[in-house]
Length: 330
Image 1: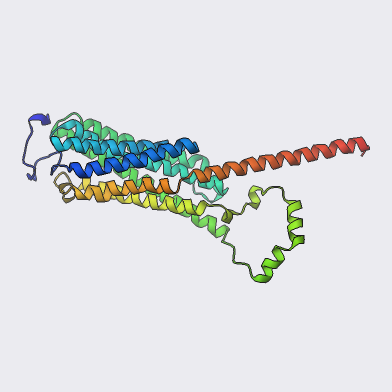
Image 2 (image 1 turned 45 degrees about the horizontal axis):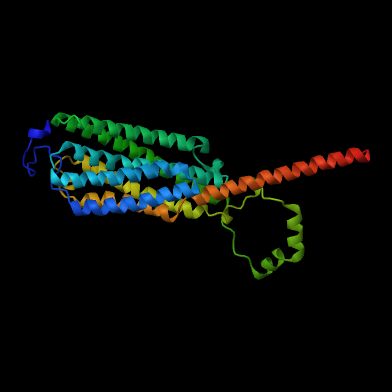
């Protein structure tokens, strides 16, 4: 067990929990930062009823509890409990962020009626990537659980499993970025942005006769008539790309960190953790505070309600016409 294991922190041949004494101040700053953004996400989740964002909120909880673990490790770097707590929670939190990002892409596809442009059907897209995320989560969690046994051999075995889990996360997330980019490209290729109208075209399209004709022939746009350029999906997909890039950079950093070993340069300096993990994951949460995906689901729901109302009106007109025809003997 590690209780009686006290090699020098500079010994390159020894396994140690930390190669430094964790900074209490830095950890406290990120505890406060993650508490604030997580509380705001809880407020937005309840107010907007975006229950699919629960994984991101749980990830935020993992982040600030993980940094509390680092504060506790400042008092005793050899204490196994705080070390496992911060190591495991900070490792798996981004997998929960990724799960919410997968769901957002599915909602965007529904909003623009773009399933035919996706490499994976919308019905299976979220399920497939969340399944991969859960697999990665479980492998990393198993690695952390093995490390909790407290022996040096368990620490090495746990690290190997964590590396496998991180590679799984990278593979699934990289494929997801390809799927999102391909969907975006195909959608715009088939629906190029409209060119600005010339003064003559504007005059013709806004003439009283034109407006009267269009208002009497269209009750509500059907999916086939949907103008995707009037919807705010582009803003949300760019935020999705930004968040995905931040998580990808963080995941690559973590893979390199573990591959370099317990005495690697990335594990010897605490500053790398805060630059390439803490700061990037905080930015992911703030991005979704700023551009919350509730707008996508709200507009999609309103469109569905409008289409249902239009279908009901057409049905009533049709049935009313049949009834009138019977009375007239037609």
